[in-house]
Amino acid sequence: MDQSPKIRYRVVEGWEQLPRGYEHRDVAGVAVDGEDRVYLMCRGDHPVMIYDRNGNFLRSWGEGDFSYRTHGVYVAPNGTLFCTDDGQHTVRQFTPEGRLLMTLGTKNVPSDTGYDGQNLETIRRGGDPFNRPTNVAIGPGGDIYITDGYGNARVHRFSPAGRLKRSWGEPGNGPGQFHLPHGIACAADGRVFVCDREADRIQIFGPDGEYLGEWRDTQRPTHLAFDALGRAYVTELAWHEGDHSYSLGDIRDYRHARMSIYDRDGRLLARWGTPEMTAAGSFAAPHGLALDSKNDLYVSEVTWTFAVSRGRAPADCHTFQKFALRL
Image (cartoon, rainbow, N blue to C red; front, side):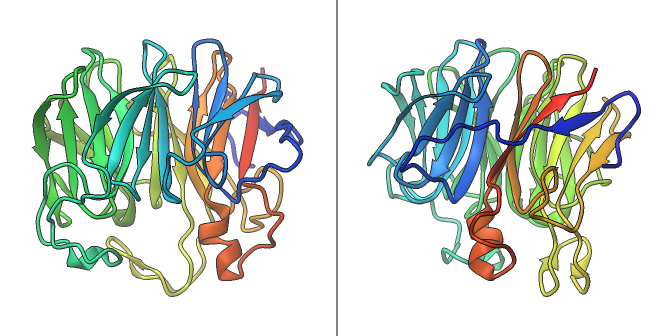
Protein backbone atom coordinates (compact mmCIF):
# COMPACT_ATOMS: atom_id res chain seq x y z
CA MET A 1 0.00 0.00 0.00
CA ASP A 2 1.30 3.43 -0.97
CA GLN A 3 0.28 5.49 2.03
CA SER A 4 1.42 8.58 3.87
CA PRO A 5 3.40 7.86 7.05
CA LYS A 6 0.83 10.02 8.86
CA ILE A 7 -2.24 8.19 7.51
CA ARG A 8 -1.97 4.42 7.38
CA TYR A 9 -4.67 1.78 7.19
CA ARG A 10 -4.64 -2.00 7.44
CA VAL A 11 -7.32 -4.27 6.06
CA VAL A 12 -9.31 -6.18 8.71
CA GLU A 13 -9.82 -9.59 7.15
CA GLY A 14 -12.86 -11.59 8.26
CA TRP A 15 -14.57 -8.59 9.88
CA GLU A 16 -18.06 -9.18 8.48
CA GLN A 17 -19.88 -12.13 10.08
CA LEU A 18 -22.35 -12.77 7.29
CA PRO A 19 -25.25 -15.01 8.44
CA ARG A 20 -25.57 -18.48 6.96
CA GLY A 21 -27.68 -18.39 3.81
CA TYR A 22 -27.04 -14.69 3.19
CA GLU A 23 -24.94 -13.33 0.35
CA HIS A 24 -24.24 -10.02 -1.37
CA ARG A 25 -22.65 -10.27 -4.79
CA ASP A 26 -22.75 -6.46 -5.00
CA VAL A 27 -22.63 -4.07 -2.05
CA ALA A 28 -23.56 -0.77 -3.65
CA GLY A 29 -23.24 1.48 -0.61
CA VAL A 30 -22.27 1.69 3.04
CA ALA A 31 -23.03 4.15 5.85
CA VAL A 32 -22.24 4.37 9.57
CA ASP A 33 -24.52 5.91 12.19
CA GLY A 34 -23.76 7.74 15.42
CA GLU A 35 -23.50 4.46 17.36
CA ASP A 36 -21.03 3.00 14.81
CA ARG A 37 -23.60 0.63 13.38
CA VAL A 38 -22.71 -0.20 9.78
CA TYR A 39 -25.43 -0.27 7.11
CA LEU A 40 -24.78 -2.08 3.83
CA MET A 41 -26.92 -1.30 0.77
CA CYS A 42 -26.91 -4.60 -1.12
CA ARG A 43 -28.20 -5.92 -4.42
CA GLY A 44 -29.87 -9.17 -3.48
CA ASP A 45 -32.53 -10.74 -1.30
CA HIS A 46 -31.58 -8.67 1.77
CA PRO A 47 -31.13 -5.07 0.62
CA VAL A 48 -30.15 -3.43 3.93
CA MET A 49 -27.84 -5.40 6.23
CA ILE A 50 -26.80 -3.95 9.58
CA TYR A 51 -23.73 -4.79 11.69
CA ASP A 52 -22.20 -3.54 14.90
CA ARG A 53 -18.69 -2.11 14.92
CA ASN A 54 -17.18 -5.55 15.52
CA GLY A 55 -18.82 -7.10 12.48
CA ASN A 56 -21.64 -8.88 14.31
CA PHE A 57 -24.80 -9.12 12.21
CA LEU A 58 -27.75 -7.32 13.82
CA ARG A 59 -30.60 -7.51 11.31
CA SER A 60 -31.72 -6.81 7.77
CA TRP A 61 -34.71 -5.08 6.23
CA GLY A 62 -36.10 -3.93 2.90
CA GLU A 63 -36.79 -7.41 1.55
CA GLY A 64 -39.06 -7.06 -1.49
CA ASP A 65 -39.10 -3.26 -1.36
CA PHE A 66 -36.16 -2.44 -3.62
CA SER A 67 -35.18 -3.12 -7.22
CA TYR A 68 -32.09 -5.10 -8.17
CA ARG A 69 -30.38 -1.73 -8.72
CA THR A 70 -30.05 -0.41 -5.18
CA HIS A 71 -27.32 2.20 -5.19
CA GLY A 72 -26.47 4.33 -2.17
CA VAL A 73 -27.19 4.72 1.53
CA TYR A 74 -26.60 7.79 3.70
CA VAL A 75 -27.15 8.37 7.42
CA ALA A 76 -28.50 11.85 8.14
CA PRO A 77 -27.48 13.82 11.24
CA ASN A 78 -30.80 12.86 12.88
CA GLY A 79 -30.05 9.16 12.40
CA THR A 80 -32.50 8.50 9.58
CA LEU A 81 -31.36 6.74 6.40
CA PHE A 82 -31.64 7.87 2.80
CA CYS A 83 -31.57 4.99 0.30
CA THR A 84 -31.23 5.53 -3.44
CA ASP A 85 -32.75 3.01 -5.83
CA ASP A 86 -31.71 3.87 -9.36
CA GLY A 87 -33.81 1.03 -10.76
CA GLN A 88 -36.99 2.55 -9.29
CA HIS A 89 -35.91 6.21 -9.81
CA THR A 90 -36.53 7.04 -6.17
CA VAL A 91 -34.78 8.20 -3.03
CA ARG A 92 -36.45 7.14 0.22
CA GLN A 93 -35.94 8.15 3.83
CA PHE A 94 -36.30 5.47 6.53
CA THR A 95 -35.93 5.08 10.26
CA PRO A 96 -32.99 2.87 11.29
CA GLU A 97 -35.52 0.05 11.74
CA GLY A 98 -36.77 0.40 8.15
CA ARG A 99 -39.99 2.39 8.56
CA LEU A 100 -40.61 4.60 5.53
CA LEU A 101 -40.73 8.34 6.26
CA MET A 102 -40.53 10.06 2.88
CA THR A 103 -40.25 9.23 -0.83
CA LEU A 104 -38.64 11.55 -3.36
CA GLY A 105 -39.37 10.82 -7.01
CA THR A 106 -42.09 8.67 -8.54
CA LYS A 107 -41.54 4.92 -8.44
CA ASN A 108 -40.65 3.45 -11.84
CA VAL A 109 -41.19 6.79 -13.64
CA PRO A 110 -37.93 8.31 -14.98
CA SER A 111 -37.68 11.95 -15.96
CA ASP A 112 -37.27 12.86 -19.61
CA THR A 113 -33.61 13.42 -20.47
CA GLY A 114 -33.39 11.51 -23.75
CA TYR A 115 -31.64 8.60 -22.01
CA ASP A 116 -32.20 5.23 -23.69
CA GLY A 117 -31.63 3.25 -20.50
CA GLN A 118 -28.09 2.12 -21.34
CA ASN A 119 -25.87 4.68 -23.07
CA LEU A 120 -24.74 7.94 -21.44
CA GLU A 121 -24.31 9.42 -24.90
CA THR A 122 -28.09 9.44 -25.34
CA ILE A 123 -28.62 11.92 -22.48
CA ARG A 124 -29.52 15.15 -24.31
CA ARG A 125 -30.47 17.47 -21.45
CA GLY A 126 -30.66 17.79 -17.72
CA GLY A 127 -34.06 16.72 -16.43
CA ASP A 128 -36.24 16.81 -13.36
CA PRO A 129 -35.78 14.34 -10.49
CA PHE A 130 -35.06 11.48 -11.16
CA ASN A 131 -33.55 9.31 -13.85
CA ARG A 132 -31.50 6.66 -12.05
CA PRO A 133 -30.31 8.66 -9.02
CA THR A 134 -27.08 7.68 -7.34
CA ASN A 135 -26.24 9.20 -3.93
CA VAL A 136 -27.31 11.62 -1.18
CA ALA A 137 -25.61 14.16 1.07
CA ILE A 138 -26.99 16.67 3.56
CA GLY A 139 -25.55 20.15 3.89
CA PRO A 140 -24.84 22.00 7.15
CA GLY A 141 -28.25 23.72 6.95
CA GLY A 142 -30.15 20.45 6.54
CA ASP A 143 -30.86 20.63 2.81
CA ILE A 144 -30.70 17.35 0.87
CA TYR A 145 -28.42 17.11 -2.17
CA ILE A 146 -28.88 14.23 -4.61
CA THR A 147 -26.79 13.20 -7.61
CA ASP A 148 -28.87 12.09 -10.57
CA GLY A 149 -27.18 10.04 -12.11
CA TYR A 150 -26.93 7.27 -14.66
CA GLY A 151 -29.83 8.63 -16.72
CA ASN A 152 -29.50 12.33 -15.94
CA ALA A 153 -26.68 14.85 -15.56
CA ARG A 154 -27.81 16.90 -12.58
CA VAL A 155 -27.61 17.62 -8.90
CA HIS A 156 -30.87 18.40 -7.09
CA ARG A 157 -31.24 20.35 -3.87
CA PHE A 158 -34.26 19.67 -1.66
CA SER A 159 -35.45 21.21 1.59
CA PRO A 160 -35.43 18.92 4.66
CA ALA A 161 -39.16 18.37 4.04
CA GLY A 162 -38.53 17.24 0.45
CA ARG A 163 -39.39 20.38 -1.54
CA LEU A 164 -37.26 20.80 -4.65
CA LYS A 165 -35.36 24.09 -4.35
CA ARG A 166 -32.86 23.99 -7.20
CA SER A 167 -31.28 21.75 -9.83
CA TRP A 168 -28.11 22.23 -11.85
CA GLY A 169 -26.10 20.38 -14.47
CA GLU A 170 -26.29 19.12 -18.04
CA PRO A 171 -24.33 16.63 -20.17
CA GLY A 172 -20.81 17.70 -21.10
CA ASN A 173 -17.20 18.28 -20.07
CA GLY A 174 -17.41 21.92 -19.01
CA PRO A 175 -17.76 23.45 -15.54
CA GLY A 176 -21.05 22.36 -14.01
CA GLN A 177 -21.59 19.72 -16.68
CA PHE A 178 -21.44 15.98 -15.94
CA HIS A 179 -20.68 12.59 -17.38
CA LEU A 180 -22.35 10.57 -14.63
CA PRO A 181 -22.62 12.52 -11.36
CA HIS A 182 -22.11 9.58 -9.03
CA GLY A 183 -20.92 10.36 -5.51
CA ILE A 184 -21.62 13.46 -3.44
CA ALA A 185 -20.60 14.92 -0.09
CA CYS A 186 -20.99 18.26 1.66
CA ALA A 187 -18.05 19.83 3.45
CA ALA A 188 -18.49 21.53 6.82
CA ASP A 189 -18.34 24.96 5.11
CA GLY A 190 -21.28 24.09 2.85
CA ARG A 191 -19.37 23.33 -0.35
CA VAL A 192 -20.79 20.46 -2.39
CA PHE A 193 -18.34 17.93 -3.88
CA VAL A 194 -19.56 15.81 -6.78
CA CYS A 195 -17.80 12.80 -8.30
CA ASP A 196 -18.08 13.25 -12.07
CA ARG A 197 -17.25 9.59 -12.55
CA GLU A 198 -16.73 9.04 -16.25
CA ALA A 199 -14.85 12.35 -16.62
CA ASP A 200 -12.23 11.52 -13.94
CA ARG A 201 -12.85 14.60 -11.84
CA ILE A 202 -14.45 15.87 -8.65
CA GLN A 203 -16.33 19.13 -9.16
CA ILE A 204 -16.82 21.59 -6.31
CA PHE A 205 -19.84 23.87 -5.96
CA GLY A 206 -21.27 26.40 -3.57
CA PRO A 207 -24.52 25.54 -1.76
CA ASP A 208 -26.61 26.99 -4.60
CA GLY A 209 -24.72 25.18 -7.35
CA GLU A 210 -22.21 27.90 -8.29
CA TYR A 211 -19.10 26.27 -9.78
CA LEU A 212 -15.99 26.82 -7.62
CA GLY A 213 -13.39 24.46 -9.07
CA GLU A 214 -12.45 20.83 -9.54
CA TRP A 215 -9.90 18.19 -8.60
CA ARG A 216 -8.29 16.27 -11.44
CA ASP A 217 -5.90 13.94 -9.60
CA THR A 218 -8.53 11.22 -9.45
CA GLN A 219 -9.58 8.22 -11.49
CA ARG A 220 -13.23 7.38 -12.13
CA PRO A 221 -14.30 8.56 -8.65
CA THR A 222 -17.38 6.76 -7.35
CA HIS A 223 -17.97 8.29 -3.91
CA LEU A 224 -16.36 10.44 -1.25
CA ALA A 225 -16.64 11.25 2.44
CA PHE A 226 -15.03 13.77 4.78
CA ASP A 227 -13.49 13.07 8.16
CA ALA A 228 -13.60 15.43 11.13
CA LEU A 229 -10.41 17.18 9.93
CA GLY A 230 -11.89 17.90 6.51
CA ARG A 231 -9.84 15.31 4.64
CA ALA A 232 -11.59 13.72 1.67
CA TYR A 233 -11.68 9.93 1.21
CA VAL A 234 -12.44 8.83 -2.36
CA THR A 235 -13.16 5.42 -3.89
CA GLU A 236 -11.87 5.10 -7.46
CA LEU A 237 -13.05 2.54 -9.97
CA ALA A 238 -10.73 0.77 -12.41
CA TRP A 239 -10.43 1.52 -16.10
CA HIS A 240 -10.20 -1.62 -18.22
CA GLU A 241 -8.93 -1.99 -21.76
CA GLY A 242 -11.76 -1.10 -24.13
CA ASP A 243 -13.45 1.36 -21.73
CA HIS A 244 -13.90 5.00 -22.69
CA SER A 245 -13.05 7.90 -20.38
CA TYR A 246 -14.29 11.40 -21.19
CA SER A 247 -10.96 12.78 -20.00
CA LEU A 248 -8.52 10.07 -21.14
CA GLY A 249 -10.25 8.82 -24.26
CA ASP A 250 -10.22 5.13 -25.18
CA ILE A 251 -8.48 3.05 -22.53
CA ARG A 252 -5.70 0.83 -23.87
CA ASP A 253 -4.09 -0.36 -20.62
CA TYR A 254 -5.60 -1.56 -17.35
CA ARG A 255 -5.63 1.08 -14.60
CA HIS A 256 -6.44 -0.66 -11.32
CA ALA A 257 -8.98 0.48 -8.77
CA ARG A 258 -7.76 2.31 -5.70
CA MET A 259 -8.54 4.33 -2.58
CA SER A 260 -7.27 7.91 -2.18
CA ILE A 261 -7.20 10.46 0.63
CA TYR A 262 -6.83 14.22 -0.02
CA ASP A 263 -6.38 17.26 2.17
CA ARG A 264 -8.82 20.18 2.13
CA ASP A 265 -7.17 21.65 -0.97
CA GLY A 266 -7.11 18.44 -2.99
CA ARG A 267 -3.49 17.49 -2.35
CA LEU A 268 -2.96 13.74 -2.22
CA LEU A 269 -2.15 12.38 1.25
CA ALA A 270 -2.44 8.62 0.76
CA ARG A 271 -3.39 6.13 -1.93
CA TRP A 272 -3.53 2.35 -2.11
CA GLY A 273 -4.66 -0.59 -4.20
CA THR A 274 -2.89 -2.97 -6.59
CA PRO A 275 -3.65 -4.69 -9.91
CA GLU A 276 -4.40 -7.86 -7.91
CA MET A 277 -8.08 -7.12 -7.39
CA THR A 278 -8.74 -10.26 -5.33
CA ALA A 279 -5.98 -9.50 -2.81
CA ALA A 280 -7.07 -8.34 0.64
CA GLY A 281 -6.71 -4.57 0.76
CA SER A 282 -6.94 -4.18 -3.01
CA PHE A 283 -10.18 -3.59 -4.89
CA ALA A 284 -12.32 -5.16 -7.59
CA ALA A 285 -14.92 -2.39 -7.91
CA PRO A 286 -14.99 0.15 -5.04
CA HIS A 287 -18.33 1.94 -5.13
CA GLY A 288 -19.13 3.38 -1.69
CA LEU A 289 -17.39 4.23 1.56
CA ALA A 290 -17.99 5.43 5.09
CA LEU A 291 -16.00 6.34 8.21
CA ASP A 292 -16.81 5.50 11.82
CA SER A 293 -16.10 7.45 15.02
CA LYS A 294 -12.51 6.15 15.16
CA ASN A 295 -11.89 6.99 11.49
CA ASP A 296 -11.91 3.32 10.53
CA LEU A 297 -12.91 2.97 6.89
CA TYR A 298 -15.56 0.76 5.25
CA VAL A 299 -15.53 0.21 1.48
CA SER A 300 -18.35 -1.40 -0.51
CA GLU A 301 -17.79 -2.96 -3.92
CA VAL A 302 -20.03 -3.84 -6.86
CA THR A 303 -17.84 -6.84 -7.60
CA TRP A 304 -20.38 -8.92 -9.49
CA THR A 305 -21.32 -6.12 -11.88
CA PHE A 306 -17.81 -4.97 -12.77
CA ALA A 307 -15.65 -8.04 -12.22
CA VAL A 308 -17.26 -11.45 -11.73
CA SER A 309 -19.93 -11.15 -14.43
CA ARG A 310 -17.25 -9.99 -16.90
CA GLY A 311 -14.81 -12.79 -16.16
CA ARG A 312 -12.34 -10.54 -14.36
CA ALA A 313 -12.56 -12.10 -10.89
CA PRO A 314 -13.78 -15.34 -9.27
CA ALA A 315 -17.20 -15.51 -7.64
CA ASP A 316 -15.69 -15.50 -4.13
CA CYS A 317 -13.92 -12.16 -4.58
CA HIS A 318 -14.58 -9.69 -1.76
CA THR A 319 -17.51 -7.27 -2.03
CA PHE A 320 -16.96 -5.41 1.23
CA GLN A 321 -13.84 -4.56 3.26
CA LYS A 322 -13.04 -2.79 6.53
CA PHE A 323 -9.79 -0.89 7.04
CA ALA A 324 -8.59 0.03 10.52
CA LEU A 325 -6.62 3.22 11.09
CA ARG A 326 -3.10 2.53 12.31
CA LEU A 327 -2.30 4.81 15.22
